[in-house]
Amino acid sequence: MLINGMDVYMFNPFQMKNWTEKEIADQIDYLISMIDNEADTPYGIAKNVENISNQLFLFGEVIARYVKKRNQLKDEISAESKINAYIARDEYKKENPDSKLPAMTYFEGIAEQKLVAKRNTLAELECELTRFKNAYTSAENICNAWKKLLEAIKYENGGN
Image 1: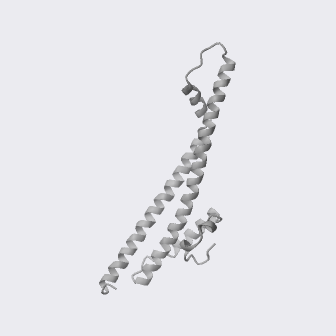
Image 2: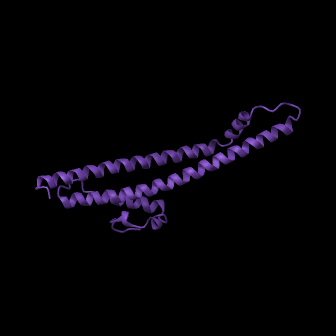
Image 3: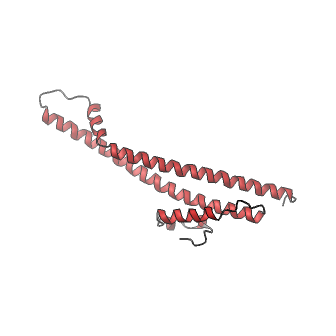
């Protein structure tokens, strides 16, 4: 983990995947605390841009983790739903050997009832993912605003 919060975005993503969520959260907290909202010099503004770039990298890592979890859970739910539907159908056949089988959607509905908890977990993952995507977009907008301010200062100082 970084101690001073510098140059996170230059680190190897293969190493970043070994960080815990707490380490990432601590690093984000540190970076946020280091923002200089009063920066008015090119150097101070550039440091803020670098800081926010670091935050974007960390947000991106968390987004990647949530996307992976979400996709795995979606696949698990899909597979279990299909299996549960066929199990429900087979049970119905055993319990009602002389009756006509209902439509497969009936059994799919029974299967879906068994997956409510997993679907709720999936909804929570979607919320977390959305939260981090929004944080990423917000930080990106802030970074762009700092960049525009830096350009304005350069323009006022003769364009160099």
